[in-house]
Amino acid sequence: MTTLNHTVVSHTVFHLLGIPGLEEQHTWISIPFFISYVTALLGNSLLIFIILTRPSLHGPMYLFLCMLAGADIVLSTSTVPQALSIFWFHTGEISLDRCITQLFFIHSTFISESGILLVMAFDRYIAICYPLRYTTILSNSLIGKIGVGIFLRSYGSIFPIIFLLKRLTFCKNNIIPHTFCEHIGLAKYACNNIRVNIWYGFSVLILTVVLDVVLIFVSYVLILHAIFRMPSQDARHKALNTCGSHVCIIILFYGPGIFTALTQRFGRHIPPHIHILLANVCILAPPMLNPIIYGIKTKQIQEQMVHVLFTNHK
Image (tube, rainbow, N blue to C red; front, side):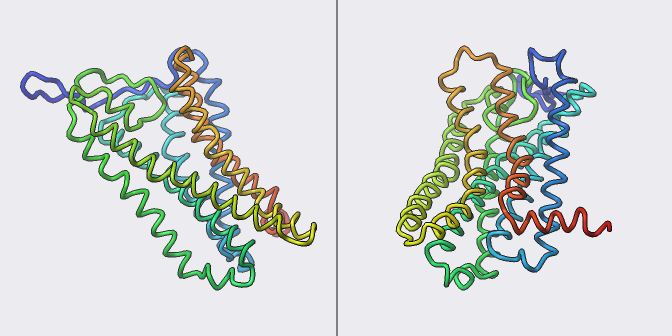
């Protein structure tokens, strides 16, 4: 469906192709997509249920983890069902409004997760450097305000993109070689000048995700400085162990994203389907692996998971 305006055709319906060049393998590719999505859904739902129903897990670290699990569910649900419908039923048709809605949730949730990882680094810093004042500083009231602040920042920074995209006339093409919609990937099909979109998107990235990475790095420099000043080796080992899960999740979240950005910038000879697969790994891997990492590395969560999954059925 198209609308005519001064003989210029503006597309209102787009077609997502999935992973171009690997169409014949779409059925096989859908298997890891489906498994990772089900794992993410079940793992994060279980994590949220355990944290909310166990009073012993109502500490700051677990409440931030609960926020991360919620964001993981939103991020994977924003993308994977759409990809599976392309792989299984070849239904890649998507309206402009749906496309903008999808990219809004993908980008805003990604920024939310980045913000949550930053406050989790701050949480570890307080726990290790000011252990006696930990629960006083990070009160439930402050945690609630931090949570609201994270989501206001993410939704507030991405909200203008809706209007930046709605003002455009999409006359170049309506075939999107991807499994999901994203800001610049959609804007580049416009006839208009998209310099404002590019600069706004870049500014948001620098002021949110890049700033978060810098502040997380500073937090861990301060944490390591405090740890290595501890007199007891046992205390040092215990402090490092409490940071282990968080460091794993930071690497898992930012690692694929940084690698994807580098391949897009310098890997000009890399086939397009590799870029698309890497973009999907950025969205698939963290939601699937986060609850597994915390389940393995955090003794309290491990115990409660065993209790919920096995004890209740005896």
